Length: 338
Image (tube, rainbow, N blue to C red; front, side):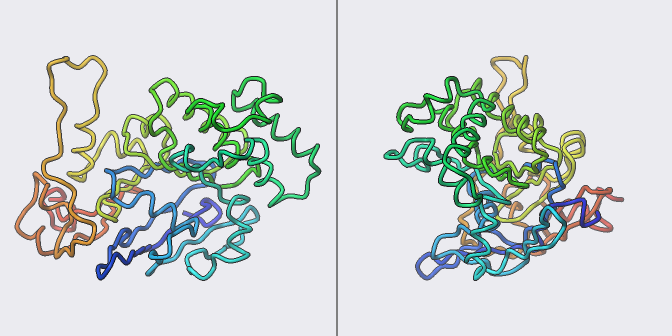
């Protein structure tokens, strides 16, 4: 892949948290690229490191969190490379990038929106932070964006407070805050959590339309494989802080190879399935994040595990162009390649 083909490159990212005397390796050697104008979905169970990866990119880690290794490279609109992974960079330069070049839709609008300010003033704050616009020009631009996002009577809604909006409408306001400066990269962290299915579809459709209108690249974080197949161009499957499989949406859904990816696929309900048919479940439970492994993190729950899986780490193996997997079964000489 040529550098001008992608907007973000994450290489061997490691993010740790200090919890008392323990060190939690929340992200442990994550590598992926985000292509310009495309959508990358990061999928996996709760606690696998998806959101921490996003917060590492945005430099929004709490005081006990630190980027312990790796690089995050962002390629600006003119192709210049910005290195974002130095934790000390969360100063003026990072604040200039955050919100203007890279924006984020957070998981819970209820806790993100300030209840004592109107939604218009909260969107205006983001706009005036990054662009020199008059109040009248900014208001007109915000009202136009609210209309594009399907919010009725945007002129009236501009002066209303968050409690006057439904859950789905609050999420649209979050999208407006993220998109008002026309960023080149949008990170959406579980943007449809706690919304009903109809509203989920509307929010995803809005993100897709905004992407098409502005050419924005998107990282969508979710645990819902049904959403992934609808919106993704590329897919990264995470487990215990590592990407265990990466590929195009066609590769992942037509030829999933990692046992964890296959298990996730089997757990998705299928339209028309027998009402008495039980969904497949992944045996066991997700280990504690501070667990120190001597082999594959998924071995304890894997139906294909062999003795060596418990004491040897799998390497990242490319099984076809753009399709990578971290599993001993697919390393050179493995039975799946034989």
